Image (cartoon, rainbow over all chains, first blue to last red; front, side, top):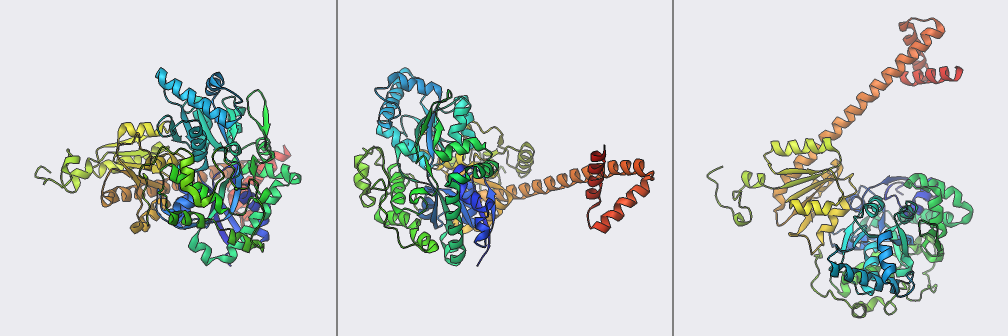
Length: 395
Length: 216
């Protein structure tokens, strides 16, 4: 069995299962010697995994699918044998945009149906007054940050490609960009929303789970052929990650985990503790909101790769013209997620657990999600973009 | 090259219009690098190779807007730069982008991708530029980036050696004063101890300094 592994990661709280597996001895207990390599961009993580410089990587959940489909980049089949975190994002707005939204709102702003309608009014009002468009920051074209912002605003009638500006920003630049007014709003993972609130420059408007209740956020990705060549190593890694994720979420270890994660990602243990507990300060003056599913590292079957999530993200790619809609491509996307490898490593029988929400996704509008019915969903979501995809699929 | 023949894409390359040198030298190249020294080294290299339109962006705020304003043919970015993800967005923007952009990657050229990732640089090409035409630029980038890393290593080593020298001198002073030794004797004592304990002289010197501070 290959015992030495190099794993790339971006310093974010949802890398916790990898970091805890290394720092708290779970990888070693499985006979693995893991070197973790901190990276500065998702492009670097993807390229180094694709080239074989990494054995495995912490990745945005849609990215391995994009790589397997060959969209946006070189086609390298990647697979997902383990989900590192469900949820964990938030949408944060500047105090100025929050004031604009409050001014035109017709209900409770914490309800995304209400806030997306308010956003539509703000966007229309800015257009009428000739004021610059609202700018939105997100982390990568193939990310749930991109998809969740788009899903939210389009529910209120805002066209993300025409009515506003979407810009990619590296997570460490998010807070600065909100402060300087380069963006009015962003969607990013922890800890950056809390950092903006603590700095007095942001107001957390929604948790990611308010938009989509249950969604794979970050995953462990490996090359398909690597998985084939190193089945025992992969199983050992999955076991180490599963134990680490459970350990990290046990309240008894909260203090120790927050300390070690804080050192790795450069955030205070206090902010990490808020995130893991799901009790977030949402305004500078100290109002809090909590959800026990703000981020899920292991609880509620978080780690088992979910093909329904793969199909959902593929539907996002189609909706926003990153990929064409065909059954073949949907199957490639779904088969990137490998619950069978997860079950095999842990010696579980295939899971028959009922998942809440029943459609396994729980979007805040539209009919319950059905993977085989993406065409119908596109209609139901009032897809305005039905032109040709902008990206080529490498076959 | 006054006698240059008209190339097939002369219409899109009005200044050049020739095969090879002159046409490539008119390519507009942008370097995005937060290390000003490395960017300067790269820019010099490109200019020496005959590329006259080279510009540097060292401030990554509003990067896309800056790039669109300059409208380059080739973008070079260092891999330590988090803004690489910003460039990835250019592959799919419909509204602002004037010409299609692609990363210089190719199934056929894994070796050159590997070399560029090893060196820490990545190249993006704009428009319908032939991939072999960027090869010269990328090769040059790789060699300059590698040269920069070597320089950096040598500089770090020189700095380390200087720091060690200072520590050893301080420890010598302490021993001379405490034990009434000459400079040579103090050095010989540390060298002997280092050999006996299988350590570097600088490590022994550091222990002497630490001990002296504790005894203060």
